[in-house]
Length: 268
Image (cartoon, rainbow, N blue to C red; front, top):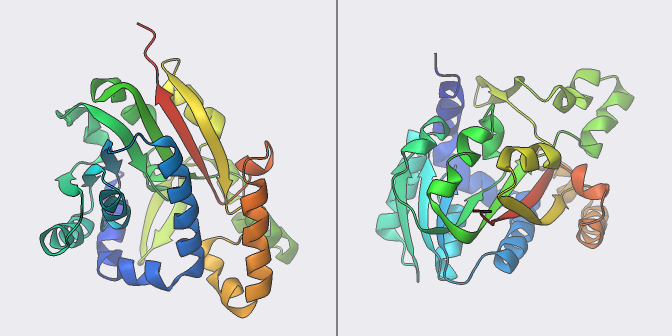
């Protein structure tokens, strides 16, 4: 059985309301802003980008508006339907194309010459082994290309706080790292958690880390959005604190997510 299939089903179920959920969440909006700040600092101008788990294309169209050429890939049929509808109806300065491409078939990506690879908000946490992607990247990247991935961290301060309520399973679930059960739209699927060091090992010597920062270390995870709405001043203080400390060595690895960028520097 394809263990990715339940995740594809879950995101297909959510695809119709995905953009609305995104738009209504103050925390997700803020997180995207931080991701874009990072990306626009490290990506080459007018880059040709391949995006993994592109979803409905929220990031792809933002990049296109900045002049990037984007190949947006996903394995959820519902997400791709929404993405393709946008491609037909949305005017952008750049160009967005779509492709059905499951993680496990990344080696079948025949196109090359990419300047950047992007993956947002933990889509790659559905993958049990990052080398299923990283080992094939040299075949599609130009020397000097940049890879930016936003991954869900195995360490999260906000979830540790659930231990105070006796919810130890929720508080420390990520520390298991492998085959952790997630639920979305009534579907259960496996997730996997990687530290920045795990990511570095998966890429190997031809990729050098050029930037690493935490995302939502003090800011609550998006599923605790009610905090941002009920206590806006407290929430604003937390986002300010995150922006000031996101690159501090310890704090950048214990947030809800982390953003890591590596540059392809082939040794041969």
